[in-house]
Length: 429
Ligand code: KE4
Image (cartoon, rainbow, N blue to C red; front, side, top):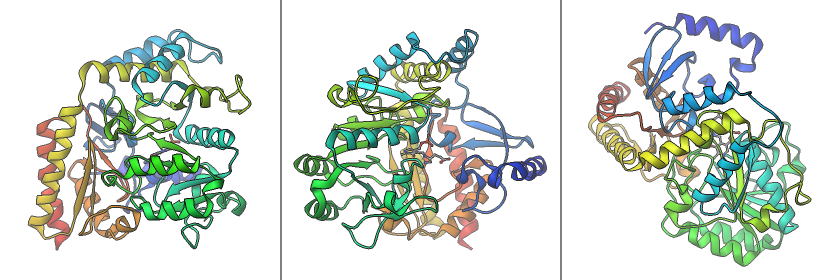
């Protein structure tokens, strides 16, 4: 594969965009080499500007569960754009879309649309603090919920102590309001609630974490968390920006049978256009301005094009029900990766939930971020590059997920496994 045009564009971009990208992970820093510049996508494939074709398992980091450029979504966006791109006023589409979301998402009695997952999370946290009149939030080590200040805190010295800034620019005072604990560890949560339960507004978590790589919750974990928070008078926020409509029409809350107080969404509900949402029971949501005192706003919230793409996506998911097939494809991919690693003598464990999966280059189970950090990221980088050169595009980070879309076929998975078998042999040397 040649990458001359990608290189030339990346050089230009780096002169005017920090790192040459508009989101850090796209720069390939953790896998080395230069990022390829994408020219187009169709179904489960993308093409770069040098004409190279790849089987795509990034799927725009989750939104493209139907694959690239599904016809009904493109038609809905084009038809809507012809009527105007934005009005800053109520449109019928927003009411239609909100009704769809409230019909399908178990915890949604009401919902507010925003333009990103970060905005949805930031707003839900503010609502939880207002509703409980408490300031502390709890999140998991390795959990990612967008880049609002309080969510960029990392673990402080002890379990029940406040967080510390995870990046320059976050004041210590902000980070101090966030406590991080290990996922899948009820004792850690019990210790925090025992020490500071009366100050905790909410716990926010990905019900199935995918930002430490995919890590399944232990059986009964979320049911126990739900009960412990209720006893402490704290709210449970499921961050379903990834799992929403990924693990089924009812998301992870349907998959797990646990209903949170609030839930945030993004990615799939925008069908590749910028949409975020947060919602929950009406009593909580009616606290949001203009009905209530909790302020939140957005120029392009409920944007007609983005809502049209989201509505068309959810309609396709409801009417075609791709889940059994793509979940089976993901399982087949996971099993094939596992046996290829064993055959090559490369330590690897593959976690899969629904149509998302992560191959960790480590042995032993990966049940939280501490375990995930044992992965050999250098080996993952070599595996990523070997697959890329043979036309399979994985996430350029060990701590992300692979996504199977409704556009992937059995033949695509078989082709992927052929490439991966060769890549595992290559990195085993
Ligand atoms: P956005 O602001 O990027 O739309 O959403 C933030 C967010 C919130 N919650 C969860 C569980 C998320 O995964 C995300 C964003 N995910 C990352 C990668 N997993 C987006 C990719 C990127 O940052 O470029």
